[in-house]
Length: 127
Ligand SMILES: [Zn+2]
Picture 1 (tube, helix red, strand yellow):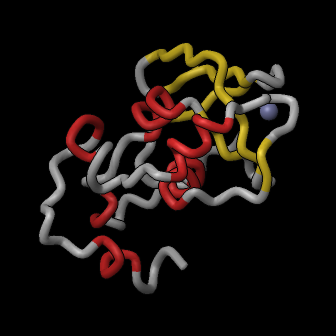
Picture 2 (cartoon, rainbow, N blue to C red):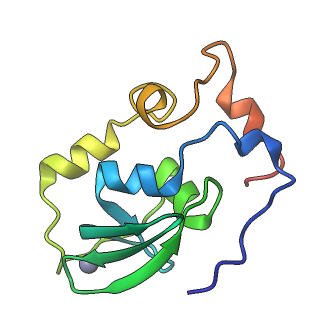
């Protein structure tokens, strides 16, 4: 897996949640092909982690706030759910109702200013 998606110039990402903290919490992984997998285990070593999914995929990810996976997780971008992983419905519903600037913000990320407009920050760069 290549890890060339770091964009240090994008300062507005700095308050966002770290990828590894996020996946440790929600145990879901969006693949590059848009398939949402269930994470079976996360073996963390500093800023990298070895991930294994319920469908027996194993790969290493680097901690980042603005990687593709981190963005896709926050934006809930996936086309289908992996049938082999058997992610339970309640977990998908919980994920679907997650609001990253509220429920997860206080525990996992640096404090976000509630008066900030998160949509405004994304204009022009993310889409
Ligand atoms: Zn899977």
